[in-house]
Length: 409
Image: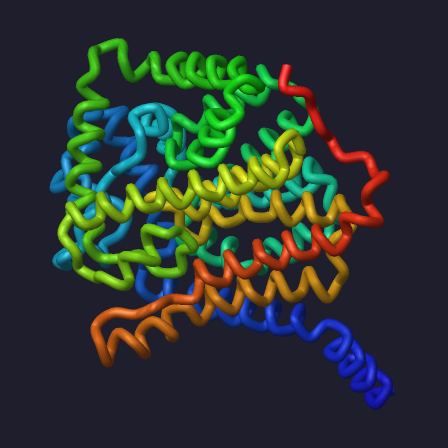
């Protein structure tokens, strides 16, 4: 019996080597980082930032929440004593709109609120998989993915962002332009998320004029509670972002954005250089969208996938927990029959290994020359190239298949 089980395991390993590599990298990352986060007393720290920001807005107003010294002191005193006496400085850099909604997070004590937040994230993950019409085992794979590891450690918004993108993608494919605009308006809670779809809608402005107007109106309506007393909250938000730009002279690893890739080549740069890198990220996102438009034109489903890739590539601050959204182009490839088990495993391995071992690869160079190349962005670009190649290979037999294509009118 034991021999039969060993043989079955070896057969699975031979059939799905890339999937095995992805699983091992993901699980190793999951165990190691969660253990370290608990040992350091920083488990759920980003949720703590949201929680503290909402609490301060509720009790003292936006000015206190956006004051770096007062915010850091409150975060350390009330939630994370391990931060006390360190040089770590925390910023509340969410928009006033997000901050206004974050007040609801502080109605419960911190630990129960964090547990409820993480449980709601799991439900959002499952719901997203259903909306994208993927097999339910994909939800299990996402639970052990690097994106979920970091999202759980930090208490971030990744699954909710994925749910928003899945719903927006479905609205695009169904040609529900008003609904798409309303969903995009929710991105005022986290504006960098709007980059990809915003650029696609600008490039195809004739088709998506209604969506753009609806998104703008929706964003303004959501922000009304923060404007009742004037523009002070938004002024302080901009000031806080300026302070964050100074801090961003460092780098954030395990990111697939152009900005973070470039910052690893020039670590500890002044804020002016960071702003230049932000601009180059925007140019890269526009190049992705324009290239996608030339290739896919009226293929709405494909252009929605392009928008997601542009968002990841071009955003100034989009880290691993938000890369859940890359499941949207994977879902498009799955629907079109481009993914075999081996191909899906390869994509998962490229993603998981680059995220898990990116810091190791970088520090091997950094210790020698003080800068280096990191594999996360190249792995994403190579994955996109593979998807395009598989699309080309399948184009002839797929010529008669039905693909959602809309007229410009």
